[in-house]
Image (cartoon, rainbow, N blue to C red; front, side, top):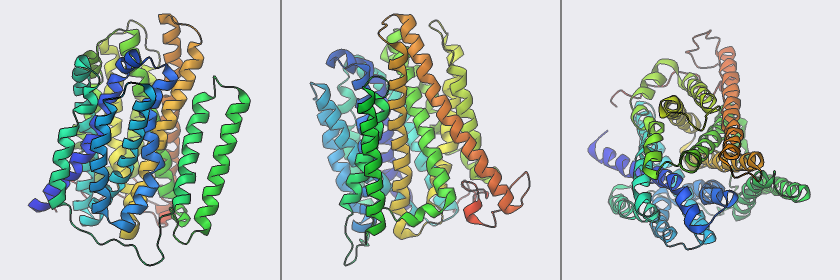
Length: 487
């Protein structure tokens, strides 16, 4: 890549880095936010869920908008709004104000993320150059996460509001640098093209109601829970009808004819459900049960940011050697092991006993996230790169919201009315089953897809060749083009 390409990649990675640091810092600050604003556990999880719901609910619209109105515009304008509402979150004096600010910030990220991803997938040559760019790009999210955990602890020790104020300056720098570096692209919108507002409203409503159904399942009246579930299913049915009849659908339903793409999105959903659910429980365990400070919590979870180093170094070599499918399955196996090891955590565990779980989860993220991104966007026409990126990020964020809601519901149900340390620990033990189960299910899907890929390709146990029928392959069973080689 030439210098301008590297500079462009740096800007896009900078925005993605800010997303990672934003989420990680807030995770560490949750107990302090609860203490000052008086939020119960059920409402506290919405501080995170509001962001991921705005992110996931509007992601498909953001991907479509990038394809129709230009990727540069759909990256820079939401980034500017992101800066404003990130700061407003720090001024919140009540829970609803903070949750609203986070929801709007998530919507901005929903437009930025698919635009940034499609700038890479359309601006870098397919093969080694694009794969290398995508793995570096995914690795910066981990870098943001790991630095965010440390920075979040230090900032929260002063005042949790600095968690929202601190990203403003770097976000402004990314915005100013992006204006001259992001190439002007021609909007693909043609006469008759329009934004599918009805589709966006129905799919966002579906996501919101499904998460609400899961969150209230253990403590709300049964009829209320069934009512929200029925409403979610009705909205989803309406979404399918709208997309089938629309001349310019938000999601071209034919894209789901690709079984590798569908499997990759389902695995992404389950993986992030486990990842975010585990973080939520771990932070509450460290600070509210063990009484650790925000700084101690930050450093305790720092090993989970191992992907910042491993994603651009180890992952490309493994992908080149074994192919995307095997690397993804290996990462899911490590995540399953990491969560299983943490399941029996006690009130007096040493950090040495917890460290393997943190490291395994960080390593798993490095092996799963980048290869899934490559799989989902590979061989997708340029005109639908925004859609492909939007689908993947929707799966990630929808999974995060569902994982948080499920963990919260199970934890509250297991804790009951108890306030003792023993009751808290019982709740955490029950909640930890959710991420372990979600990732194990993703692992089963990945293994099944890998076996189908072997059958389709006749490649035997080593499975190196592409499948004869791309639709029958695993997530992507061919060895990827060397991502570490220079273009």
